[in-house]
Image (cartoon, rainbow, N blue to C red; front, side, top):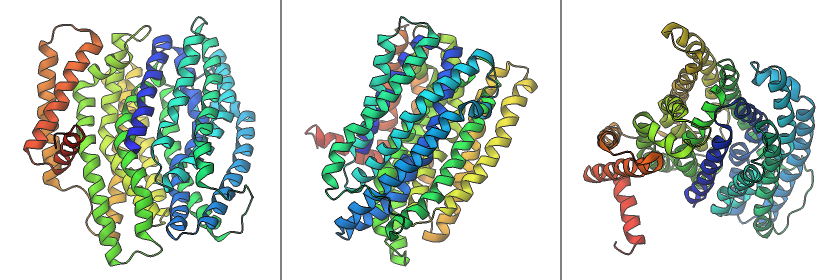
Length: 515
C-alpha cells in the first residue's frame, strides 16, 4: 500500500515536472523556481515526514500496541501543538530572512534573478510549513497501518501546480512562476486537509495542548532532536550541491532538479516504501530492550527488506546508466525542453545512479536504528557524508570540467556522481555498526551478482532494440525499449531462481487468477 500510494504520487509528480519542463525548459525561470523551492523544503525535511516518522512513530506505535489509546491520543495532540508553535516561528523568520538565505543557497544569482527568487521563497514558506502537519498525519495513519492515503495525498499538491500552470500558461515565464508559487501553497493546504478527516477518526481523544512534561513527549523530543540534526546534515549536503550548481551556469540547477525527479522515483517507490512500512513493525519488535533473540529477528527482517530493495533498485540504476536518454526524452522532451536538454539530463541522471543503491539501503538501515531508538549513529555517519559531499563535490564540479576542457555546465554530472560516492561511504558506516549490534546483515554476494548480471544482460537487449528500432518518437520508443528491458530482467532473474522475483511473479499470477 505504501508503494501504491507513492507510485500514484510520483506519477503525478512526473506529470507536473513534464508540464513544468514544457513551459520553462532549462531557462532562468526554471532555475529560480527550482532553487526557491529548495529553501522552504528544508523546513519540511527538517521537521517533516522522515524526521517526525522516525521519532514519533516508535513511541506512538508502542502505546497503541500496549492498548493505551488515551495516552496515544494525548501524545498526538501535544506533538501537533508543539509543531504548530515551532513551525509558526520558523516560517515567520524564514520570510523575513529570505534575502540572506539566498546568499547561502544561490550565491551565483544576482540582479533581477536574485530578487525574483526571494519573492518566490517568501510565498512558498508558509505552505511548506503546512506540509509538516501533513507529516504528523502520516505518522498517525502509518501507526494504525493506514498506509495508502498518506503517501497518495501529494497527488493533490501536484495537481494544484499542474492546474495553475495550465490556467496561467499565457503569461510570461517570470509572472507564471509567481502564480505557480501560490498554486503550490494551495496544494499544501489541500494535501493536509485530505488527511485530517481520517486522522480525527483514529484519534478520538485528540486535544491540542502544549505539554512538555509528559514522559512520552520527552521521548519523542529526544529522538526528534537527534533525527532532525541528522536530517539537517543531509539537507545541508543537498544545499551544498545546490550552491555549487548555481556557479555552473544557466540550466545546471534546473537540469539537476529534472534528473532528481526521475532519480527519486525508485528511491521513493522501493526504498521509502519498504523503510516506511517496516518502521512500525521494527519498532514493535525492538520494544524497550534488544536481547539476542530480538536481535536475530530484527536481522532477518532487515535482510529481507534489503533483498526486496536490491531486486528493484539494481535494474533502476542500470537503466539510468544505459537507457537514461530514452527515459528523459519520453518524460520531458516537449516544448522548450529539447533533445539536447534530454542528453544533458541523462548525463546527470547517470551520475546519480552511482549512489542509488547506497541511498536506498541507507534508508532501511536508518529506520532500523530509529526503531531501536538510536538516533546518534545515523547522525554521526550523515556528518561524515556531508564532509565528503562538500570536498568531492567542489573538486568534481568546479575542477573536473576545467581539467577535461569541457563546459563548466557539465560539472553537474560530477556533482551527482560524487554525492553517490559519499552515499556509499555513509552506507558502509551504517552497515558496519549494525553488524556489531545484530550480527551479519546485508544482501549476499551471490544474490548481488545475479541481480547485476541480469540487469546488464537486460540492458544489452534493450539497447539492441533501441539501435534497430524505427523512429517512433520519444514515448513510442520508450514503451518498446523499456518494456523489453523489464521483461528481460524479470525473465532472467526468474530463471536464476531469485526468490523475490518468483514471489512477485506469484503474487501477480494469483491476482489475475492464474496462480
